[in-house]
Length: 60
Length: 136
Image (cartoon, rainbow over all chains, first blue to last red; front, side, top):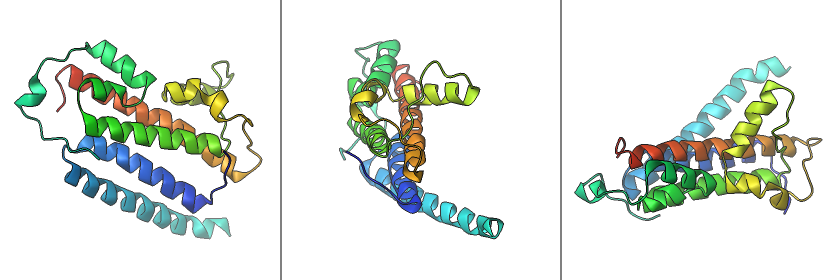
């Protein structure tokens, strides 16, 4: 099986799966795990996009 | 995802396997250490995260570091890759076409494979801590 991902899609996949692992470690109930995983996922994306925009002037 | 109750007396029952056995099981098969400790939610979470990252990394044709790497970064990459246990040992079956770093996807795959191993090593440490009674 082979496939291609954009940079954003690869980051989102990484963020989703690592968030699941973090939620598994940090929380004890299903409900708190889901909340923590969602928060972690969106923070990964927001911080990743924020850093990308901060670095944008350096690419020009 | 299975419900896992907060730390209670039910979790305080003696662990049938020793901490070392739990740690080795958790390394070889992601989630197995938690399964031995009857932590179903954590077992499923670690298996899904490790397997997902590893399979995606191999599908993107990331680089698999060998133990005979000459530079320090290669050695660190090998340790990270080895952390995913059975997914590292099966890497040559999962990535039959070999690595392709001529495209950006191959580079993303290299990072995902390493992340898979690191996530599983976190699971090993967590399972070991639970087995020793130091974590909830």
